[in-house]
Length: 204
Image (cartoon, rainbow, N blue to C red; front, top):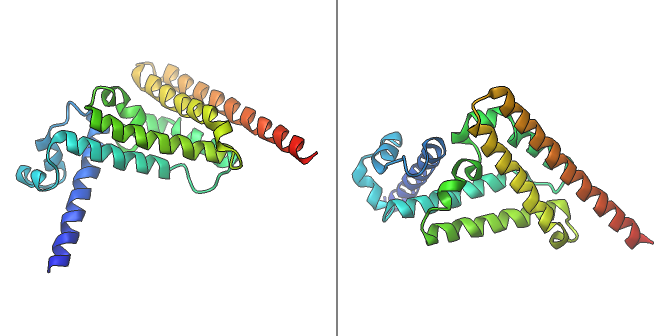
């Protein structure tokens, strides 16, 4: 019975985290109250404090969970073609129109900057892991050489999506997304060219 109770508590906690993640990305952190989140999760308000000490505690846990999910969407193989496919999926009209199921960076970045220091530290460590992951995919043999390109790629994706969501003209928004794809592809192809040139020099 104790084992079931522990598992049930863990499952309930994760349900709250996932429910809060969707609401935060759709409505914003500041606009999402505990009562609304718990209602979405079909739980009572009182159950919240069995899992989290405060809303700030919830936010930190949601960001950590969301960032792990974002990293997982990068795929498993360090392959340039896979990254290009990821770019197109990220900068798609579907992602733009459904922030609740998408990237936490594009949906929450401005609010994360106003969170408490502990939450921002959680986000910072998660972002470092993602940058390291992308850098390794860009240059498996020398990730540090691709760190700047990794940061640049993430910046293009997040900024393009934020801008595309902000404008009211859908045609203009689509143009922003396509421009983001083009700029990301330029960066990826430049990186591949540099890697190929470096590889040829080493083989001589």
